[in-house]
Image 1 (cartoon, one colour):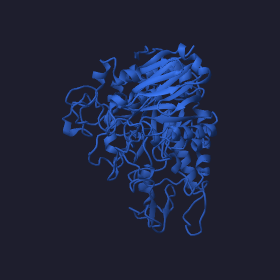
Image 2 (tube, helix red, strand yellow):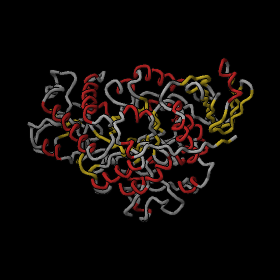
Image 3 (cartoon, one colour):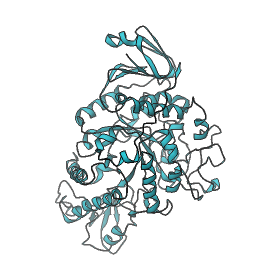
Image 4 (tube, one colour):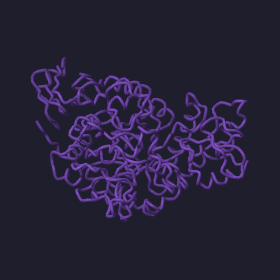
Length: 545
């Protein structure tokens, strides 16, 4: 049984975006879309995606129905870590275009009811940043963390006339900005408290960077490695105080601006001042227990069992539910958990044996669960994680942890260059997916039964029925295969991620209402009496009278 909801056209207008609506209000209703700039759309034909290319594709994003786009770093950089090594926070990288083009993108997006968020790399810069070059020659410069000796593997010798070593925050090319230490240690006299001059200067610099872009039409920031700022801060109390202070400043100056963390622990980061934080692959197993089928980017320490969206039905959703309930109980309405399909650091949904034909249940869950959904570019058409790619701009963290497979060019059409670029394929930032049956936006837009059209309808359904969004909880009626839950008082969601059919008996008051179930979007779900029968990879969203 296939029922197609009609996508809603009730998107916010440009004037509505500039109304004094709080971040809490607009973000609660938002569907986020992450763009990896170098892989999305190439307007100038050099084989690398750019800002102008994103602008040219805004009509697609508007058609899809997303509310905000988040750009991975697009600032000046030597690209040792794909732009997460920033050399100038106030200048767009030449490969992507100009500041003027980024401002024009924000204006064009706003005209379509879409906000633009930037990636703020707060804890480190590139070794090529003028701040670091100056500090490497000046022993009295405390913008970074320096010691007189290598106190471990993360310390690197000074590249300048200054003696000693600097602390890296991720790669050696990314020196840690000094936000101070939560604890002093006589054995490490270089440690500075959080209120020392260097940490104070860096807190002020964060405000200056945010001010620059917010004044030019940007709507907020996703903060990279947000928990990494204050060092030796085991409970993250000082890091939390830093972000709480910054959030207070934002609310005074820019009350519509969003602050979203890459922290991976919403129960800690939201009380610390962020509007939202993601469940991520490197903190706990909430995300891994849903999507990770061990076929792409590996996290060795986290591989403890099959995920729930496992075609053979070997997983359990209980781990995710427990993590979600614990996080939301702590957050207590102060913000939201964000749930991504994937991202630039983690495997796509379509990875290994999981094909795009199996993704309907995943999107039915993502877009009806009370989290803020974040769609990674291309996941809406089932782009796959491409194995076996070479290291590209720091993508390979270990032999079995190469992030390049999630960063391949967007597949817009079925031409030789997939509509990504007019350059020769050998000049592309990364190779296209070589699969003969690779998906494309053009083909899926033309197919009403495609994954893309399903995602579009589900986004519209979420917008048309606020009870399917972040407001209110979810009452789980069955946590096995299928997963069955009630949203609000009138919406029933059924998800079966395995290939074999599944059955669920619904008891109590909901059972009596099943006879009134009206499908808003469903495939392979039958309702008979108090029982639901769901085909393999079936799903359904029903209105109950």
